[in-house]
Image (cartoon, rainbow, N blue to C red; front, top):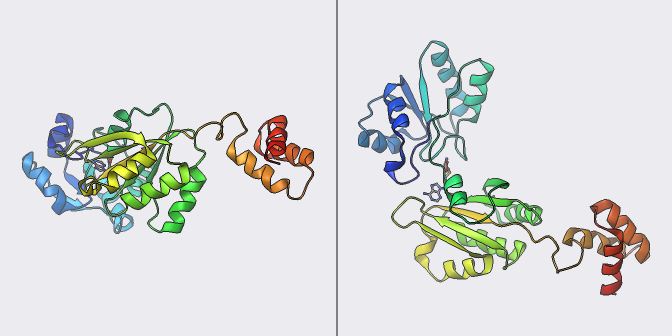
Length: 272
Ligand code: SAM
């Protein structure tokens, strides 16, 4: 599993060059795309393609070759293989077959963005690409709205504005976030602000909508609305109080959500 650059060719490690030169074959996501990288480093190892549409069939062929004693390097178009890229089936099957799988670590847009983000990195959730359809995308974002870990998304230039707008709408405009664009390339931009400001900035500058993006979102505020109980607990209490007396609604919402009964009781009384 050989990581390759996400832009700057200087990021291909000497160990990666050595391995790519020495293996019997390179399985590449797009052989034409990777030909440039190989030319640059004078690597002449034969390549074959392994992409999301042929991974199942090609895996069997690759396993046969590996079992026959060949060494094969897997690369993606950019960055670390298997991170929003093909290879999972191959690696899994290789383990099942008792073959040795060796990572040659290197660039990944996810880790590069996180490390430069200024957001908490002790716990994070990588969500890959958001669904293309508006409804599915919003549903997923709603499910993530209370997430306390830093959220990481990959995004394409076609959808960056829609996704940022949905994030601002669902997570709130004041939520801390980072747009990391064109990492390691000429127009690298890393902007740390809140979602509302990031959206406004990107809408106002068409150049910022171009290229490749990682979007990182900071943790959900603990108690939305200041001192009160968490938003999800309030939502449950709001529903229950339509059918039950306040005291009972607060008690039931507390046992469902884990929130304090007294806090929910006070919340329901205050909102009248
Ligand atoms: N395997 C790759 C990795 O380890 O980063 C990711 C592959 S995924 C198919 C491609 C996505 O990664 C892009 O759409 C973008 O979201 C992100 N990406 C790749 N290169 C990037 C870069 N130089 N700057 C920002 N994001 C990048």
